[in-house]
Length: 196
Image 1 (tube, helix red, strand yellow):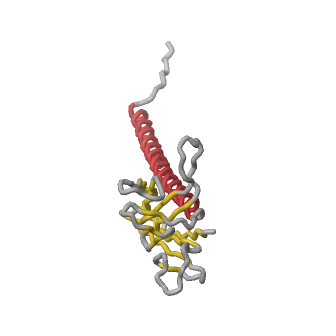
Image 2 (tube, one colour):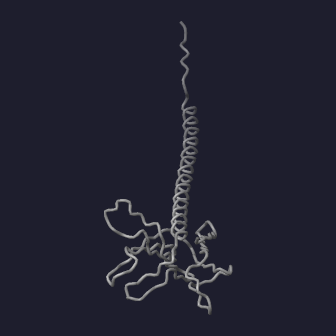
Image 3 (tube, helix red, strand yellow):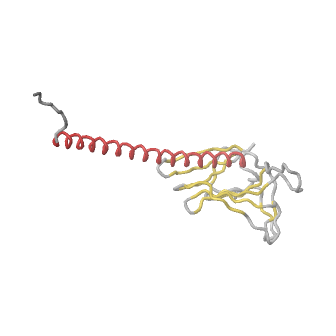
């Protein structure tokens, strides 16, 4: 009579295989968790970069189309075409689209950029010369740790206020606007926008 040699796994071999499979599974799960975290951080950085690029593009477009057009504000007094300090500036610029031409309106707009509540804000008015009931619309553009603005005169000097309160200084518009931003986790950024 012949003996059948049935070969199989012993209980010890099965336990060792399960132990190895468990270790590999834990390593794979940890690796997958790490990849997901990196993707989340990358997505957040990409979104912040997109907001920064959009803000700088919008500021560039508006500031570089600044014109000398004073306005009447809702209190009834005249405000200069460009008014600014270290935390905000308000100006009149071209570039307001009127593509449908169904509404008769100017292509000029009154805009303010300001630093408040750890953010850059863009405020626009629906009309240049405002009635007492005119209201501005504000939009938060970018989260920043700090921001301030400076204004270049014809002599190449930067000022923290505009218009410059000096004798014989009659420039209605600065030559350029310099913007300093300190971005959380990214550091500082400086931009200079020339007014043609």
